[in-house]
Length: 207
Image (cartoon, rainbow, N blue to C red):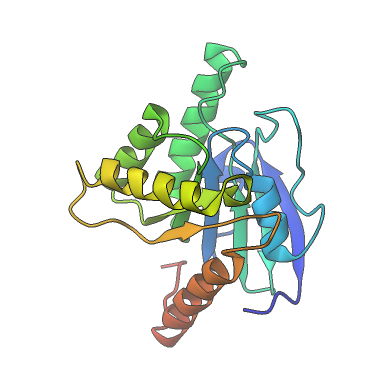
């Protein structure tokens, strides 16, 4: 996929305030500081489309971008950030859960995992929730450039082994580096293929 245009649309504090669900939507989510904004910027070939920050938990709203004028990229708040109050964290979780379960044009959720760490309970629980809720999702390993290649491969394989304890089949997996733009084309190819399928089958999200 060639990115011709990528524009910010709006930020929403409630899922009901999101743009009209008339075109395919792909959302990105992960623990705070997983490298989500950097990956989005690398995919879109822009330096500052999604705001990056050294402060985890900076994204507190649902941020919509329209790409090539025919699909939405959605930047969701990070989950599990410990330094916000329990009430605020609960509000984040409610916002995220309501969006994921009610957004009828959400085609796929990309769950970002920091490849530098061993499987984390909070990530595994979120992935499990996606499966139990029937949410279509893919797993995206980030920051592989921060590791030696053999360590990165081992960490991904360890993660897969952990998932196989409860999953019979795994979703699509992507291994990425925002710094080197590795894996970006593969994600965009998946989105293009999915959009083509939806167009060819005249899928209407308004119905």
